Image 1 (tube, rainbow, N blue to C red):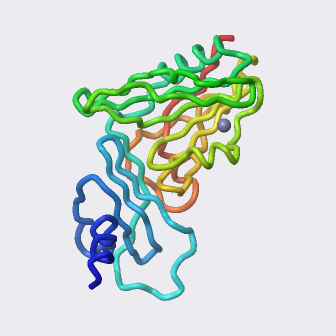
Image 2: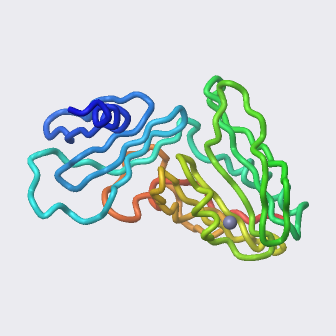
Length: 234
Ligand SMILES: [Zn+2]
């Protein structure tokens, strides 16, 4: 095999889903799983273990391998709502301008901390910012920004900015008592919307995160957050 192809395969291996045994463990990195029910990308980082379908069409041919279920596990457990609320509060102080912040994961403590990003330029419709300094064992897990008084949505600029692997969150309507928000899991250009969150009027009980994920669409909605409905104070 051409050594360049060997290097590509080492960086992103392909494994067949076992039919009778368990999926072999993997270290930090990314691999493609070919399964009876489709193909998937598994991503492992200090804070993340996820399996996401690369498409929702079943293969036309019945492959002889096992099946794989999508899943999402954070080593820090659930996203801490007090940090999200602290971000919203700090962002309101920066109105009418947009604001940005990150939740930084520490491998040593296994915890997240909030850091606001220092803006280089900020306006009500745009922000350029510097990421805060981090310790050796720290990495950005969640990237947060606001659209100020405008609604939350994923702009073309957000798509250009959302590279690598992280959870991204955008907040809007910050001048209202109840802001709007969208969340998504970003995996190297693959965006997996994370459907429900406290700003959307979730009434349901949330299953424990890390519980065996259900197959099929909407799994994130079922497994992601167990936040109950909460109202931000204006
Ligand atoms: Zn945006």
